Amino acid sequence: MKYGTLDYIRAKIAPPARGRDAVAIILKTINRKAQLMRGICSIIDHADVQYRLYIGDDGEIDAEQASLYALLERAGHFVKTYDKPVSLTAALNELARAAQDEQYVLRMDDDFVFCSDTRVSVLRDILQLMPAIGAVSGAERQCRLHKPDPGLRHHQGFLLRSGSVLYRLNVHPDSMSFVHVGGIRVAIVGHTRNFILIRKEVIEKTPWNEQLVFEGEHTDFSLRLARAGFFIAFTPDCIHEHHDDGIPTQHYTRRDRTPGRKARERVFRESYGIGQVQNVNFRGPDSFKRMTRLMDGLKRTLRLQ
Image (cartoon, rainbow, N blue to C red; front, side):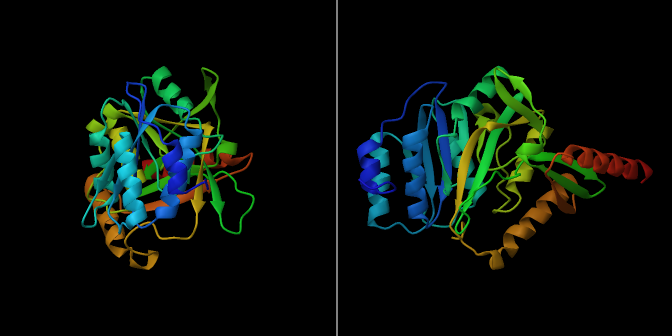
């Protein structure tokens, strides 16, 4: 059996487990069969928690993919296919609502891969040990073509508002300061993205904003969690891999992302009074000092306005 194939999945897929500690793994895919099957194989091999798959697909489905979905449904997993394009956020909300006994929802992308460092149980432990945390994410290891030495990404950090500008301060995991909770390294952050474990009741109170087509949903979700009084945690003790094969993830290419960008600008302006989002990346031993100086300077500027 070859890894990443239907035969591999057929031989190894197991019925989903029931119970409050089980995890609903939700993902939306479109025209990325090879990436999806690779991701499912990695979950089968490396998931350290009981889980049930919830997959949404609004792309073209060939005979092999139809067989895959039939196989998953017979095994007790959930598959929703659409006959027309559906936004990422709308699909995620529908998949999260379909979760049954699971009290935890793991949001991932179809080009994410579980590996030996992917310890979802660690994310769940943080939610169980820290009741004020509504969502927690792990670190992402980027794996691109032509880059044989993948490293961790800075997809987490803090949000700072100055007038109508929102600064997204992205901090590399190597430069963060952690506390230890139950032997797990944990940091409270203002934003994170993608591979994130969320309490089901949190999603029920603060679902993804379906006005956002594709862009901006990560920052918006972080802002919605903060408004609802939930904290976000990050730990480098759970690492997943992002295999960027250079294949578009949505119905449109980067050149055709104007609708998504306009939706993001409208939502951020109407919901938060934010007219601009700026990324500031920090990495290195003095990154926290530099970030603190920037935040202090922005706060002084804001007080003078």
